[in-house]
Length: 109
Image 1 (cartoon, rainbow, N blue to C red):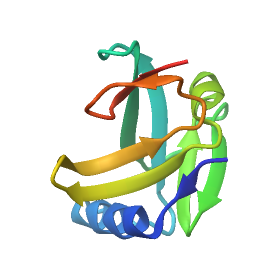
Image 2 (image 1 turned 90 degrees about the vertical axis):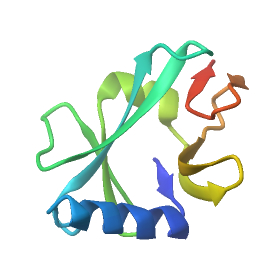
Image 3 (image 1 turned 90 degrees about the horizontal axis):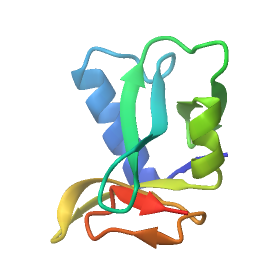
């Protein structure tokens, strides 16, 4: 499961609508790729279609899809949105991460 905070939900809905997507039927894709200063980096983008192998979750009214490989790294993660002094953007609070970098976009297990 991936959770979405109230603040992140508001931002997701706003950005999806700006992109011409409908948050009621389209998806937020969360993924992990190699790279970043800690070894793995998060990916977040919007998708109109779910792939057959994707896992589908809904949290706080947001439909989230994750590929099977990435799910192993992000299970239990909460998607937050920060507008603070350290930068503006989505933040992944991942209980599986043993180490994260200062930017919050990279982690290792």
